[in-house]
Image 1: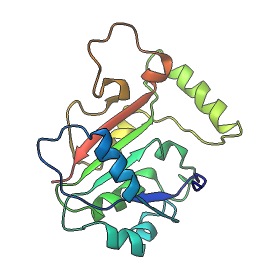
Image 2: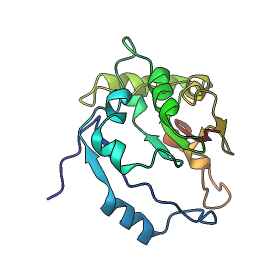
Image 3: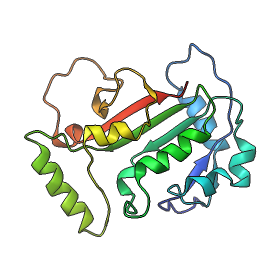
Image 4: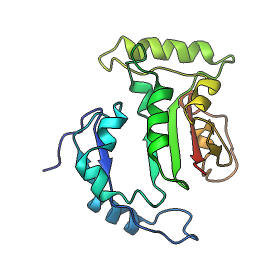
Length: 186
């Protein structure tokens, strides 16, 4: 029986060296990684506590690069009045060894003719049963990387990462409102 998914929980997987020529994980490698994954009962928005968790400390090799993935999580954080998302990410980034990568995807307010739709969606998310889902500007999202070196193509709509070929049709409303980026800690 699979454990129920709960917001704010984090997963830690064993750190394994990989071949430098591997560009994308294979299905077999991804499945194996999932089988080694460990669930820890900590709040991802309390990085100091999560990073001190015995399982996290023991399963990750803190002398080798680590990948930190905050995919679709930070826009559900509701504690900006107590602690900023930028400060949360700074705590994670400070703890990572050199050579580590940080990936973030987040709802985007494009600050253009589509901005009004983004704000309507945000209002809908915040006042629905979901109760969370804030949109941030490109500048606000860039700050979450705390000055790390961005990997090309940088902070862009997620649909621009690993495209399946040339863009043949206009991006959908959802594709224009989710941005992502990957950065490296030197």
